[in-house]
Length: 315
Image (cartoon, rainbow, N blue to C red; front, side, top):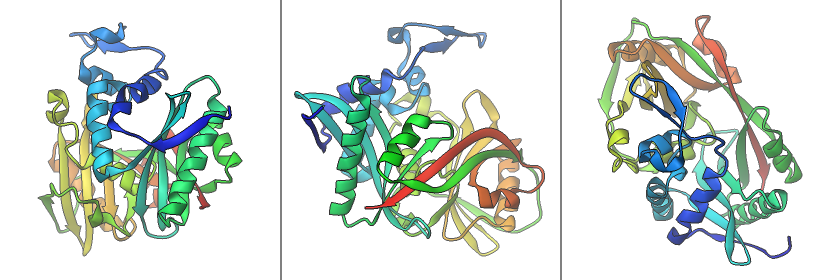
């Protein structure tokens, strides 16, 4: 296709972007009062049910809230048009992390119509790279699940090389020795994590995860507002960290952790995390970490098979 035009997304693009996202869902399901799951028409699902299938783009209502947050500074969304119709979407996040990532623009999500999918994806990635260069961000990063050959091929065509990989580990919550302090931290300003690392929960980029988790963007949905979530600051053995802890859907005894800090994960901070989560009533911790941090988790940690690969290239 030669008539593809990439431009910044606007609020009126919400519905077509949501349609692109929903096209990737093969079946819509809902749990009944007994916990049994059934295939159901999309129309009978609640907004929360739809969100559970893949996040805010699964319904126009939550998509509007999410896109509005991005347009107000949370990220940089782009669409690609063909003959005036939106046929692709890219969600990007400018960020600054510790080495080896540094200053960068992260491609957090890409959606394309099935017709001419490769050409649309190429146009989006070319446009995103141009945006990174215009912002004087020296690196473009992207991520995909291990085994996602289509995304890996797209990145290869645009000369993104493998930077690192992360895997999801679980380990028991446990009381431990050590002094630490925890306080609620509602401040959602992303400047707090500028230049920091994300040793736990970095699925994509540190800024992407921050904008999806820390601001109260979707609190208008009652079921989301009622979810068991803590946003806290922790100080343990001289190490500071900002921690997002949430109860996993369908598994209320497991805490899913995301952590931003000036330094890598240490044994002392891990001991404090396990002790705090135990006091919060959790029995298991879910922690996505880079390969070189797995050893810090110790012999009790087990992989659940989820892996992501992070790619990067100069702009």
